[in-house]
Amino acid sequence: MKRLLLGSVSMIALLLAAASLPVDKTKSEKAFDRLATLKGEWRSEQEGVKISLIYTLTANDSALMEEFRPESGAVMITMFTVDGDHLIATHYCSAKNQPQMITSAITDVQKPLAFFLARISGLKSPDDWHNTGLTVIREDNDHLTQEWTYQSKGKSGKRIFRYTRVRP
Image 1: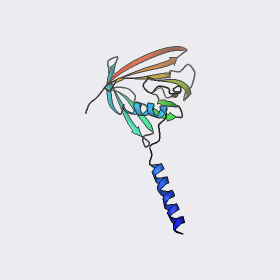
Image 2: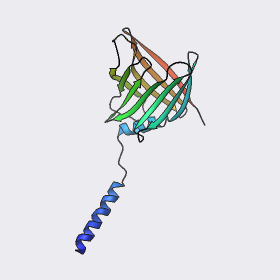
Image 3: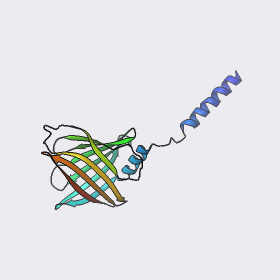
Image 4: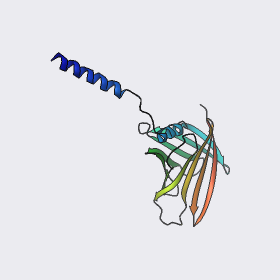
């Protein structure tokens, strides 16, 4: 009986020790963690319009929410999440559509994150304005560049936004 009890206690101690060991993160999780360091407020000015960009971790730190808040105009939201070996960005656009963009498999967590259109909902016509990609370039701790690609009426374009972190 003592052996059984001692064996059971030893097994429980082993399981508890194993549960507390850190699990190695995947490259996509590491890339998400790097993206999550954007948490906080950023500012920019685009064509004379002041813009605030606010990043917030949510859903038990499994999603990064980006709020694009222009001084005038509609607020837009982009949600970033990990999905297997890549990241997903779902953009809730003022054009009332929702492009879901995905990275290629993450191989280098230090490289800029390039998202490409995987699918889109809310698009009434293929000619309607919609985003087709996003590249997030973290220049350093205080400077961020976003390159958004879009399509409208069969023509493609790009808009570049440069942000500076707001220090409390």
